[in-house]
Length: 139
Image 1 (cartoon, rainbow, N blue to C red):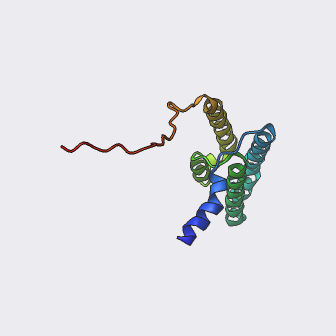
Image 2: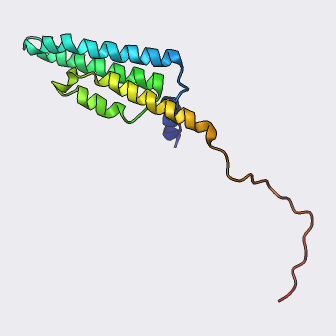
Image 3: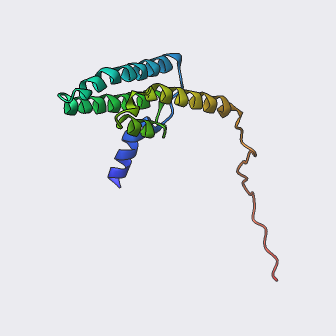
């Protein structure tokens, strides 16, 4: 039971959706853009065959770092997982998947935050306290 609460305390802040600020969005796009640009020289190094294993490892480390950084900046979103898997496949990893992923998550978060204030409780229920007990009639 103590492990569960420790896991919840550790992972709950990462899973929360933080309020989007301009700085968070700009930093997330900058990280994603730099990561997508780094894919080209890494892929060129792996294409020569000499640096194929270190290049693939460097590519995977960059992808993991980008996923962690964007998750911390924008909050966890399920779209980050398929992007990480797609980045592990040689060829499609040259597509700007991280930039597209950040753009989608920012769009969804803004949409969610715009709809959040309109949600109001349907009924306002208050607790009622009884003053005295009435005897129940015998049946």
